[in-house]
Image (cartoon, helix red, strand yellow):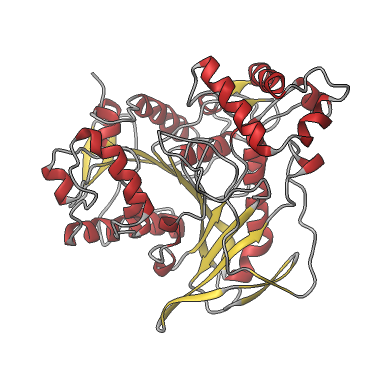
Length: 462
């Protein structure tokens, strides 16, 4: 399958993999119009149809972004024209009705790309799922709110464009994924770090109702900030841009090159000393009627089964990113799911490659991602990021010492994630992963040999 008809025209892809297990890949498919000019800081708009065949064999440019966790993205080609997704499918023909997994990349709400090489591995599609990687607006181009923007909205809101992009992508999946062999009625959203925060925001949003059937969150839980606070931050950015006194501040701001918008956002981040917390989902009574925690506490989340977990080093340390609070956030979500008759699964991932383990490295942030995607080439960019995160805590070499044990862990994780997407049960090969309940508080401890443990609510708690 390398030619597909979607609602905006024909797209041509390429074929990857072994002759007996081919994967069709389509890269840079537009799911919304370029958010440029007057469409900057507007909800995503429909794609203009095209005539003929659109070659979808090259990745789109990354969304404009800034340095994150000390890593610079200045060498990454970027464009405000960034609303594209990538699809990989093992289906030989349309209407194969395979389960669909939609990945939301990490990088906070500031950085990252669904085009990253790790996410293009064939591991998950080879398990019989259609995989889509989504790119959205980021940072101040994706989340800036402002009173003038709210005044011009039919809903009286602004901000949340990043999340509205995701919803547009999920609606695109509903309309088009069957043509790639996927089942629009069996979609699982999943993500890591900032991607997991995106997943939990969608779980809490009524606008996402019916767009996915299951969810997986790895190391992140969204929050939500009152709209008026997000608007105040937006006003500071407009002042930095020098457009706040213009006759038409919005028109002036939309005429500024995107690089200046990113720079102004960084200046406000530095002034407020909020490297991670400036850009957030806005509690706007439309996309997000309440905070994520508030939506779950009231039982008003989208009632779908979900998996949530974290890496042990994120909970107990030492590591650059410590998030012991995640457990209490997850337990609150689990308790709400149980009350409304839903299912929730908890996990703690604790596997470190042999070389780094000898160096004393613990299982820190992002460590599970290459195992989920089957990316066991340490020269990949993601492993270089992992080395940068692990080096201050003992890693002596960029080669982590990957071996057979890592392949076993990766194989098990890919099977669990895809089994959950296929059936709602993440158990593998006769191994039962029990749902969480308050009395037994069970979770899956994922390492060389996964085991069920009790006491999820106490992991990392002092």
